[in-house]
Amino acid sequence: MLVSGSVNAGCDDAPNDGVDYSNCQFSEGQDLSRAYIPNSNLSFISFIKVILDKSIMMNSILANGNFAESSFFRANLYEANLEGGNFEKANFTSANLTRSNFKGASLIEATFKDSNLFESDFTGANIINANFEGANLNNAIWTDGKKCSLGSIGECKK
Image 1 (cartoon, rainbow, N blue to C red):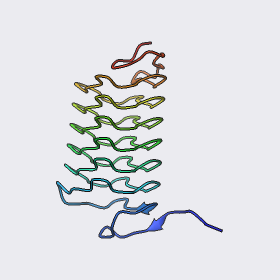
Image 2: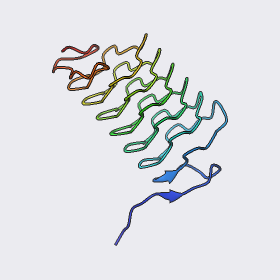
Image 3: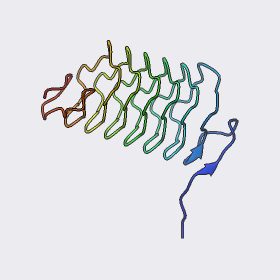
């Protein structure tokens, strides 16, 4: 019988499934492309200018973390919790963000070009100058709490 749960990890431990890096601070500009860290706790951490391209991060918690200028190109953040985080100038191009939680997050100048944001929640998020070109916003909850209708590609149609 397999039992799944969080793995206690120190800030120096390698990325892995279910690790708890909450409250860790990492060096700027690290390349963690293709990291496999689903079900992990990355809340309250500092990951500035970190490259997480093509990473597997579904069901992970990135709440209240600082991910400014980080790259999540083609990353899988399915059902991830990014609530209250700083993602200013972050690159989410072609990322899977289906059912992700962005409530109250700072997404100023973030890029979501061609990303999947189906049923994601942007309630109270700051999206000033964010780029949603080609992004799937079908059934997403917009910053004002209203649901985007079907056909919301690149913009939230209500």
